[in-house]
Image (cartoon, rainbow, N blue to C red):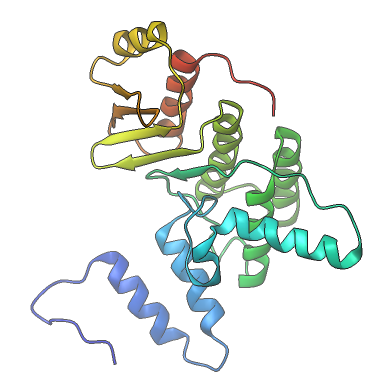
Length: 230
């Protein structure tokens, strides 16, 4: 039984979660509930290092790679190349809507493919596959692709974490010599660099979605410098 106070209005998210549970009561409906929960929470960190269930201990991206290694070992093949895990936890409306990709397993497979991309060419191939199979990308899907592209960009900078904490966006780890710290303070006067933990914290510009991803990309390029190769 799920109870809630009748004198307090439900948030939109709470209403969606209760409606999902009410609509999926058949045996085996847990997958539908889990996929809807992923969509409600968004994919800001869906392609990063924090998920629930068995994935909680290692993160979705690492979990996918571990499964890939296990399959390769079983087949006697060489394990796939290792990629640096990049956590992106920002307010981005990024998901695969059920009306666009009808089927929980199909959506989970596409999430897995996006999480596993290692190069811009890989991302372009997955994006083309999605558009070819399901039609023009709606905005949440375009945002999901943008998140995957930003993760590639952050990885080339050696950054493993870009997260919103309170009113600040945190980038880590970042190596900044004194000259680049001065550049950071000139371009972003209220930003701070913590040498001990190699972290840049910049005030959140109150942007969302691709506008926020573009802002974060420009900060990395303007302060850290040109990204390296994948």
